[in-house]
Image (tube, rainbow over all chains, first blue to last red; front, side):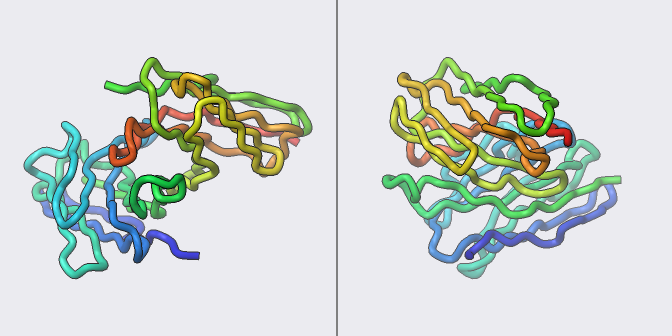
Length: 117
Length: 111
């Protein structure tokens, strides 16, 4: 069964360093998302991406964050200068499209646990 | 801001009991999805409901979408220890908008 894959599963980084989190969405999906979940808190939306551009972003997604789809299969989230409060699980999700029920369903990867020290 | 309130936040029951968890909002959603999340893993989709009043069954799990599409419930019949986990509801305002998640109900089923 197709699935969203994320790498690495765990990343430890020094405060101020840049990190890139990688995702391979399901191949025929058109919409891509990044969410984060701080330990013990709810899953929060960061950004959505469609047709090679950001379609929506939350207040969390400030200038330190960027997303890219460099090669038609990978979808990356970059944090330029990490802060302690960026420590969280980061989830990538993808969705086929819109309209029919099955096209609106979002599928999540296993996540990357980012620890900023 | 759309908020999805889930209740109860925590639930501990004996194996074999029935339970219902709730997901409520003051906003209307075009679709609502229920996920289950294990510790350290991503949310796994259980079901999507899109029509007001819709009821969907997944083995011992019954999902209902409110008539006004503002709320939903998940009912588990004869709970098993394998049902233990975090149950999340998530709604989309329209077909293209991102999902908004509730905080979840953490279910513990004791043998």
